[in-house]
Image 1: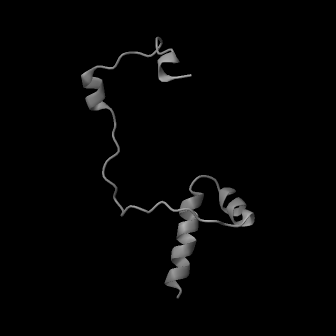
Image 2: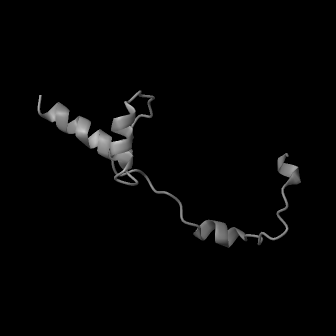
Length: 70
């Protein structure tokens, strides 16, 4: 199925004014984080994911706390 096969007939048309008023993400207030790939044990992942959204941020906080204690 390609893009041409998608039925968009029920989507309303947007005007230029609507596009201009649409919310856009502003500049980041904090320095950008770097995306990486890391291997963690299933227990660690389950523990942090059990806390709900923001689990990667919580892992980052724990690692920062570890660095500060050194």
